[in-house]
Length: 202
Length: 171
Image (cartoon, rainbow over all chains, first blue to last red; front, side, top):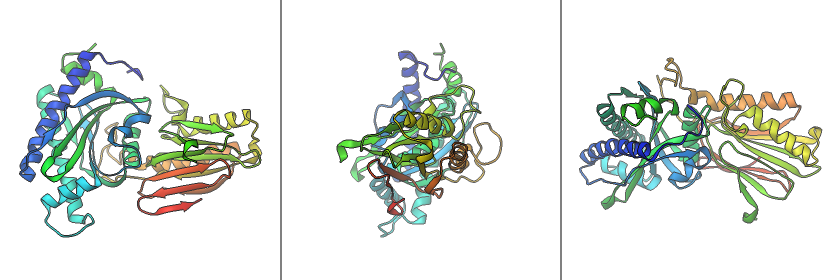
């Protein structure tokens, strides 16, 4: 796989469709969990230079909550649920009723579990669509600067590349001012497999 | 002052003799390495992602790896008139942001995922490279589990570190 391969418009469309189906399924899961309507943006699929990745979520210093899962199986990559701090607190409140200002341990695990469920339904939809086995790891949780949370993922997937493929969807629960990003970072080495199964290889 | 702020992004490095402030925002497992020749007031900052370019067959840009980034910075600083023997280093970052028990690394070998120890390995690599080049590491704020922003003031060599968890400190 070359380091800065171009993707054709057709391939990008197919990858966007991956984002659509995955996040659509994840949104249904989230909506069921919190019993609220969840709105989705049109997914973005693009090759992003390493330097630019944290701009996608509002800059490297933005405080966020991140739930990270490593993907293994027929194809590998990473999945990340990113929430602005205020959104994370609101979402946690929907699931765990307490009066604490700060995120409690219980709320943290609730968010962690949310990430796991969203990633699970996203990847399930993908697996069904493509026949590619995708297995998420247990979720990792971090509350910190967006750049710090993302650079770790870049390390995992960009050993020899200066770009990463990002398939990103924004979702929001408008009555509760909750908005977040669900991002799939397929390893570029797995891209041929995915494109092949989507029927848009080369 | 903010006009002279240079954002050194992931896998980039920047060398200057102007009185800029160089910054790495949101360092996680990445390491920011500041090199400074205090006599000439020439400095450089690298935002390093990976420890070593030698194990990688298809390398990306040199700013990504500890060995090539530091080497390139030293050469550029020397071109501007800095002296190797006057160079001092400070390092920030190299945290472990997530710990996932039983995670699988990208090569599907059971054990900690690559990213789990990459921060430590980056810091270690920076120290080895600096030692080889004979540049003393004067101060560091590395490791732990939190993100950091680093600002390096070329006019006086000060490095300040911000983090959400620990506020501001000076190195």
